[in-house]
Length: 454
Image (cartoon, rainbow, N blue to C red; front, top):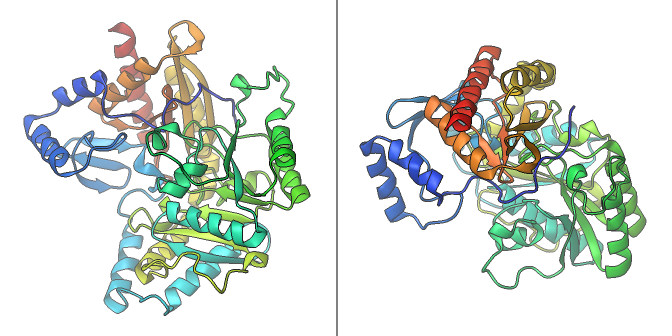
């Protein structure tokens, strides 16, 4: 595991209103541009989405196929595609469930949903003393966590981190630390406090080369000064730029929460289910959280499904509605999730991700280290990040360069995420073959070379 921080975040991902985006769109076939214009006509415009990047017609395994028939290695996938796209085992399970029980009305249960709850409880860290609720998406699951934390502690304030992302609903953008999602929306959820994250290369506490965990200890100070704080919410590992705190950070955080009677809520929406080489990212640390939020790949990359896992002692809200979602015990979603978990286990994909991490990192380094604009690399399991810096200025981020590298790579058949303005983030499916990874490294190197020689 190699973790150091890259550049300070600018936005949660690549935006859709820059000159580089316009230049990219001009390269697309006229028929694709017509479809994109039609899409932009009917959908409300929003940053990071509409107007869109391209049109896809098909998705299978590690590839997307766009409207012109070009195949694209998908190392973005919104982190739902641990199994790749359209895994046949997930599809078969969904079809079987659709034919038997296509919908389970609220206030009823079904065997498939019960089986999924039991399975997740057994898989979660520690003993199986977990309870849970399902929801259509992780923002709703995080919303349930916020409600439950208030009910269980009697306190309404939370602490979360600058630059974090926990969902795009009004309550979850309040606890998120992304200004992009908050600006212009007026007063948000009260009591949402934010503190600096673990960023060793840009530590606001100026710890220097030897990390003193001042960022964690500052949380203790906030508890002492604020009061009414019921929970600390963190992304166990920031998947957007692949930043992972050391073990001591989470030990300190757990001790602080225990000392102040607060809950530790982990958001593992994008990084659980094998992405980091463990079923849950917190397994790298051996810390027991009070709640865990899951989503994205839980539905096998097909069905929208999320879950809130909470320790049994938090089962204290039986007289109110924490979730109450129409699809809260979706039989089809549970079937997809069970098939996904079976596939992860039977195909050894989690162990495979851990095993291939170092060889893949070495290959990525071999293809890119010669370029003056490539800064530090961080990696964990099947998560990789490269900092893009000003050529021969390793301490200065190069946002414009990172964006153009993305579009050059897209033109050559590789999709990935640009995070924090200047971080190239690669999240390949866990089924990725070494030859496909090398294809991606080759495309990336060619794209960087074009940008540097422009």
